[in-house]
Length: 301
Image 1 (cartoon, rainbow, N blue to C red):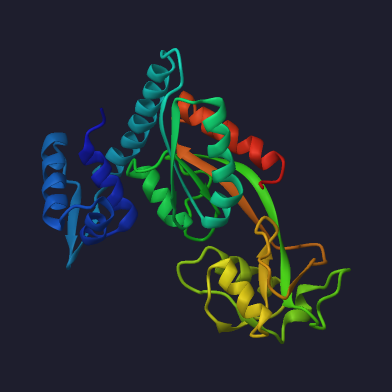
Image 2: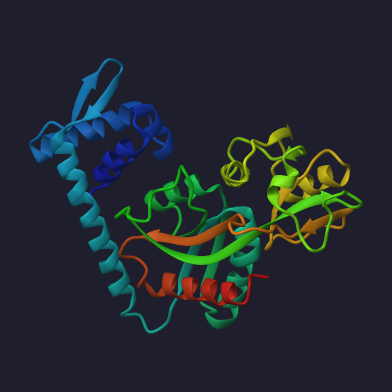
């Protein structure tokens, strides 16, 4: 087992404050501070330095963190090897992810696992990508279906193993009868004067919309902040604006049209699977990752 206090130090390095760390780990701030004081005593080095009402990590803390990442990866590899000694794959596979990925990949993969590995149960939780990475680090989830973005760890982050799963092109969603409802497609720049439907906060789609529109030469005017795809398409159907619609998301029965986008840089979401480094060889995770890849290879649904 890895000393839990190392996880606390890692969480502090990620979240920046004792209070935020306590919230992420479901602890009290005093419990976080106490565990870090005990860790500093046991390693024989100062780990935190007060800076006003905050704390900063010392050079010694960064040394501990570097070794903690390696220890955690080795522990995950050991767990995977031990699980491989079992004659059958069994247990609960915990999958977290964004809603569209869970619908397109998570549910079908869980159904495949139910057929191919009857001793495996799936537990699926919907969260935004940033929260999914945190759930991996706090051992609340085993596999994450995420969208890399500004708030996501880079692919070089040594705490995770991240693999591409599927590239999901975006279309422009407009009401029936709209001038841009052309089957041959449109350039995104033609939607520069339109109102847009997209939620700005706690939404993995918003950075994609902003980046795509900026690349097309305009800043979208957000008229209504709506997140769930069924609600978004309802607003589009009623003529309140347009939006980008992922290909893997099915259209509800509204009066809307999915219009292909033209040009050399069509916006797309790139789904990846993320697991804790060293854990991918665990039979339970390997079965889940294989099922996800099989589903993605035929386009999700």
